[in-house]
Image (tube, rainbow, N blue to C red; front, top):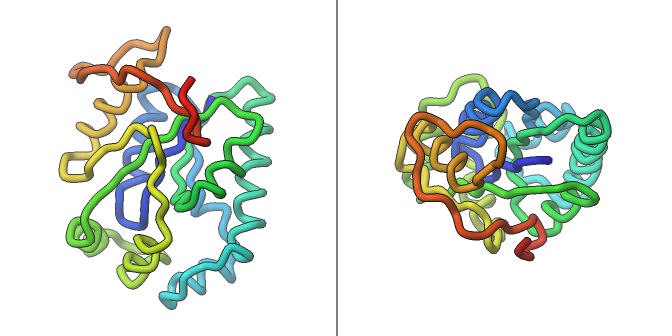
Length: 184
């Protein structure tokens, strides 16, 4: 199984994803680690990536997800996955849950001012929000709470069977939705 933690830059994907993976005892992957040096440099300069820039990046992530799944490993993936097309690429042939971290431009900019040593900066927020296709049926979480609160709520809403809930659980989600927007 793969849990995709998605959203635009500054939404807290890596922080929330690491918390979920630690709690679940799953592998954590950060999609940023799969970017080429050229893509990182482009984003550092505030230049949005094109679909052509993203294609090999998405393919490399998907290959890793398939390999980990084939080894019996569950994965939490932090990835912007801004378009449904990207989520479809990532989820092909996998059991996939989507967690969408959403925030206002002001919240995203505020988060980015506290982040250090990252190649993607505030200049990308507007273009990523313009590109973003909000996922239908995802577990959507507003980023106005602490990462710990968000992670605990996600855990409870996903209702992962056989795994102990966190200390403070929230109301479970009544349905699960795959990355393609269809309910299961």
